[in-house]
Amino acid sequence: MKITKGFCAIVCCLFLWDCNPPPTEQVVDTPPPNVILLMGDDHGWEETGYNGHPFLQTPVLDEMAATGLRLDRFFSASPVCSPTRGSVITGRHPNRYGTFTPNWSIRPEEISIGQVLNQAGYHTGHFGKWHLGPVKASSPTNPGAMGFDTWLSHDNFFEIDPVLSRDGGTPELFQGESSEILIEETIQFIEAAQEKDQPFLAVVWFGSPHEPYSGLEKDLALYADLPDSLSEMEVSLTSMETGLPAKRPLKDVLQERFAEITAMDRAIGRLRQHLADQGLRKNTVVWYCGDNGVPASGIYNPAFRGVKGNVYDEGIRVPGLIEWPGGLTNPRISDVISVTSDMFPTLCELVGQPLPGRPVDGISLVPLIQGNMTERPAPICFWNFDPGNEKEGQPYIDPELQVGTTPLVKQMNGVYTRSFTNFHHPAIVESDFNGPRAILDNRYKLVIDGASGSGRELFDVINDPGEQHNLLEEQSQVAAKLAEQLEEWQHSVLRSLTGADY
Image (cartoon, rainbow, N blue to C red; front, side):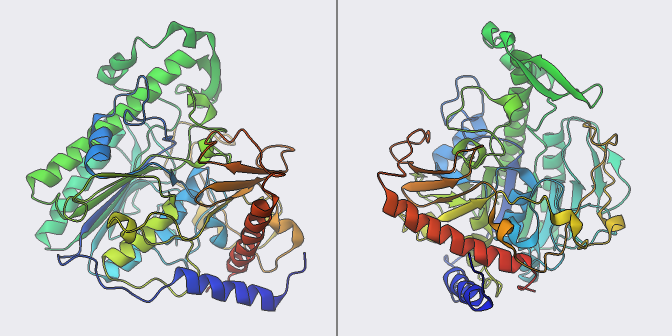
């Protein structure tokens, strides 16, 4: 594959043209909406009552699905957490700025949704899991540096009785169920915005249901009668007692995992009730999603192929719900494909702000919200970049500034905190194009190296959502076209990775 500067420039121009339409007027004749972005940690597509789970009780998410816009084909930009979170904040695929996998930070030059809405007059806050760099005050990639006026956040994940940092200060212990703690903080934030007479953006990223699992007694009791057959299977996960790997019966693990999901659901209900009590629900966009699919430790009767970490659908298809009574008056179920990268451009259009003058991978879903979109105009691309050679390069940020401070249960290399990394990538080489990757259009999905030795696979995901029947030979022209589009997109992403967008 020959890579030329001219070719890269052409591709970049094409992406800028496609992804950065002229600024549009606000879509409604009302004040700009308040915005709340909610995200579950490792919450997979099938783990809701409305998607037919046989055990899980999620009455609040079920109600949101019944009264809002239910996105049945909604995807995380990555099958793991940090990259997906970067896609929400920037609207860009995380490989563009080196957030390849967990504990790889964002870059300070990225333009965030916090900055855009802050400049539009919004009061902005982040609550919960950040995982895009340390949350301490000195970090150049903490929520404050990314445009959030205030934050109560963790470098990574957390359980009951979390340790969190407020506005970059010394981490503090907060006693209680973590989802409830985050929502109470969010409510206080909303009240502060009301006092200032400002619209608000609240990004609330829960620690649930990420392993290791725990739950309140009242939530555990709801799942005490799971099938005894589940006790015959053991899964590996982190021990709450030691922070080290352990094996436990799947029945016990699922009881705790499901309890966490139900507690998170109840906390969301508390937030929605507060919005209703304050007369804020009508003009508040509440958008819920997961950050990736279900991990191996929590899999029960998966709806799709794969697991967290795979570019097959079980790794990237997640719950997606939008509730906005003032702008979404007719409840709908949509099968239009959409992705977490779409959040940024959607919100930019809703508040009347132009997109940054750099490649953006998401598209505005305002036409879908309005009922005017029946198909996605361009495919969605997924790519697990292989960062194996990156650590030979120059650190993008002083390593001291990348050291995390908020402890968690799980040990890594003998410590209970997480530090981050990111590296300069000055030149593109042939091996950069490797790694599991996929491209999804409205009907077909091409997967390259999705599993060990899998090569290329083409699936008709409308008729084969389980990705079981490889149509590569029967639909060779479709596969060839998708492969060409995917490679062109990779050229654009790698050009961004070199820092060309800054």
